[in-house]
Length: 285
Image 1 (cartoon, helix red, strand yellow):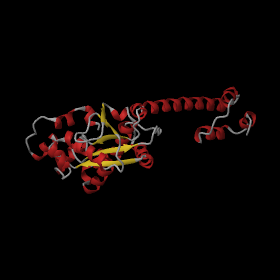
Image 2: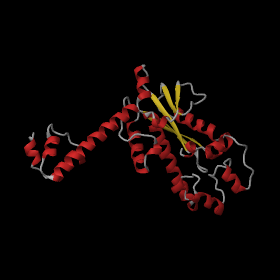
Image 3: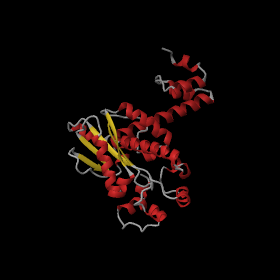
Image 4: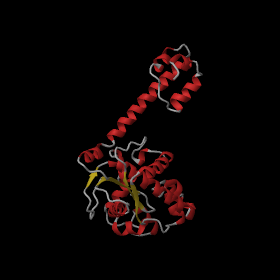
């Protein structure tokens, strides 16, 4: 093993690559030696390493807090916990998609978080990793016709139940974002803003969001003038323009007020459908 003096003979660029790029274990005393080094680049590297250590420590603590609900259940003897969440309440077009995921015990995947807080690239990478690591995962879908028939709230519950029913192993407990699933015999707990408080729900939210986004990109190939690949069916200015210019497609939700207006129909009676369009929290989903 190299001693500190030998390590410091290396170019600072190589040390940066080793201890930041490759995340190699930092030898005891090296950080202090870098801070005392006469080279400005070496002292700058020491500052970067300290910031990196601080960031890594904060991330570990965040991920530990994200397992609060799971840890309570694990300590009570429950081993298999499924997180459940949905995506697509707010859009005027496209299906509702729910995800259900059973994560390994004490799962701490870096960057795991509410899908709405992640950019597209990070969501996609995490979705791949979650699918590889999970004991089981499943997707449930409620089609546009079901959204129009049941209303978006109950269609969301249907998609969630389908996701749970599709798991290859039955969980002992469900953690569900914001509600509980009726007609499901598995014990469960609804957690308000669960996708930012539970690792299992966060993982489910990522799978639901990435699956739905992929579906909307496919719809964009079929209806390119609507821009579904860009806005994913949400009520953007570009989507409203396309709706006025080109009319309503088969994937538009006919129970939603703007779509009904485009069809020249009377709005449906105020209900959860209006909440789906008017509530900021719902619009982000």
